[in-house]
Amino acid sequence: MEIVNMVESQIIASIKEEKDIDKAIRSSANIAFLLIGDILTVKPYIEKLKEANMYIFIHLDFIEGLSNTKGAVKFVADVWNPTGIISTKTNMIRYAKEEGLVTIQRIFLIDRGALQKGIEMIKSCKPDAVEVLPGLMPRVIDQLSHQLKLPLIVGDSSRRRKISWMPLKPVPWLSHPVTRICGNSTYRFTISLMLSSTYEG
Image (tube, rainbow, N blue to C red; front, top):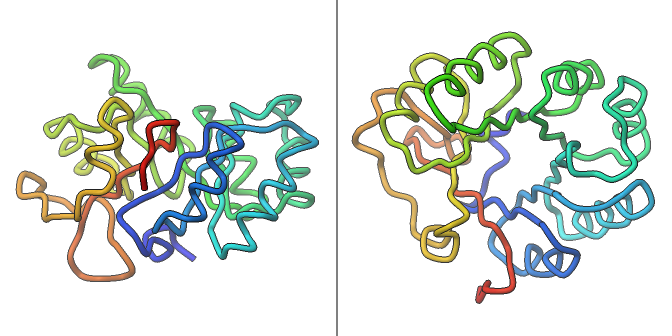
């Protein structure tokens, strides 16, 4: 299933602490980005989220004890069996695609050089979607949408409580679709909700 057809809410829950798992389950999100854990704890985290009928994407760069190898990605696919993975590393994206996992490449738009490098990396490894941080950069997002023709997941943790629960609205400055929700013909942003101690959902 394509990631744009998985999304049932304007929110993707980013889990940065163990206590955030329950918050993610109670939220309206049906997709979770798992940014915590080690080789012993990730599997029970995934099982708990799956019991809540959530799609789970593991950020491989953040999992303790996991190497950046093809064997490690095969272990993730066979033993943990998440929906997909997130990584900043092109080799991990390629390995995950070979294992049949949905892939999301994370890029950081620090400056114009980082933007161009990110575009080159994405064209090289061809992920299923791209996560852009920070995401509140309209002209840059518009440029990415033209050049990549891929779903973009955007968000900004510095304003997480304010923007994450806003109803999705059309984005008039975009001339190319960013992320489609539930197969609808209207295109929207997907906001990545950073669940934290300030969360009041």
